[in-house]
Length: 160
Image (cartoon, rainbow, N blue to C red; front, side, top):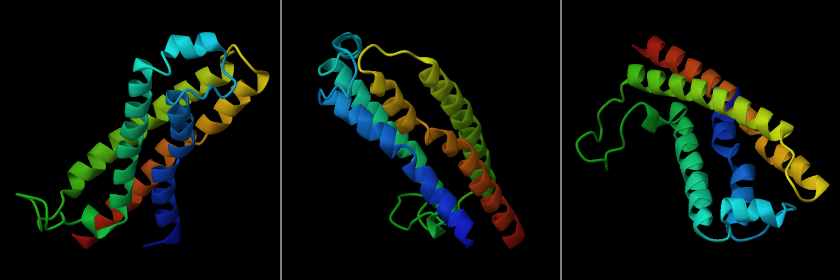
């Protein structure tokens, strides 16, 4: 496995962490320079905290499978899984799902980061910069996932 493929897959799994830590802080009531009106609009701390925690967990849960593109469990289902354990993973399905994921995360990150860069949050002047810095790594998610997916497809096609 080439080092660049390993690095890319691991980076995909890690790009959500900065924004996730920020969201978990907001969920706990740390405003990170946001105005009270922003915190109130997000209903944090409170019921809005559940959404922020869910979004953080969900984002990481959909990023972690990128590691399967470089691991043996991305080619053969782990034996402990019922019904499919030990069976080969369908490379075609993995490539389709992963490609759609790369497209979706590229669009999502681009739109979200551009919106965030152009947003003027009420509160401390440094809050906008902090949010931009914490969300900027998401711009890597889609392109890196696309590269690792391409490598997975090429590797699995050559093995057939």
